Amino acid sequence: MTILSLITTTVRHGLELIERTYTRQQLLKLNDRVLADLGMSRELLEQGTSAFPWKTAEALEAQVAQVNTAQPEVAVTRKPLETPQAQHGTMTTRHSYV
Image 1: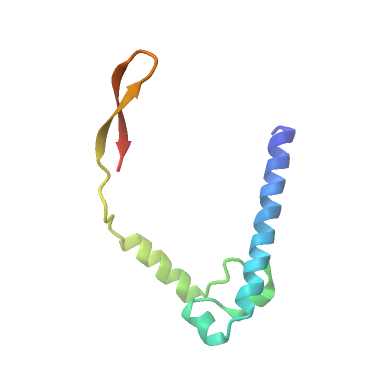
Image 2: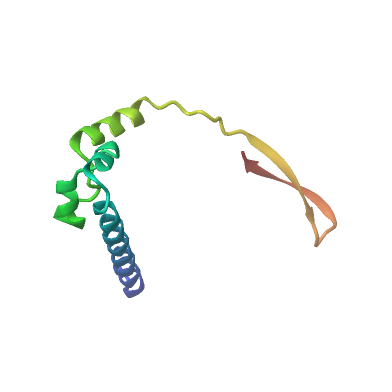
């Protein structure tokens, strides 16, 4: 691991911790009913960022079940795009995914 990648990893981790701390503070301002509707636990929120994602066991199980049963709604198709080639004055074909 290079010094640059170590610094990048450390900075990224620090920024994630700051973001989670801010999110936690905002969530703690909500009442228990709203937190329950979101599937969040006040007890986990009060434990701090180490308890992230602060979801109740039931909410996590429901989320996993939803992901496992989800069907893709949109098919990816390959559609050619014609783009001008300024250097040679010719047209080339590239593909985009829509």
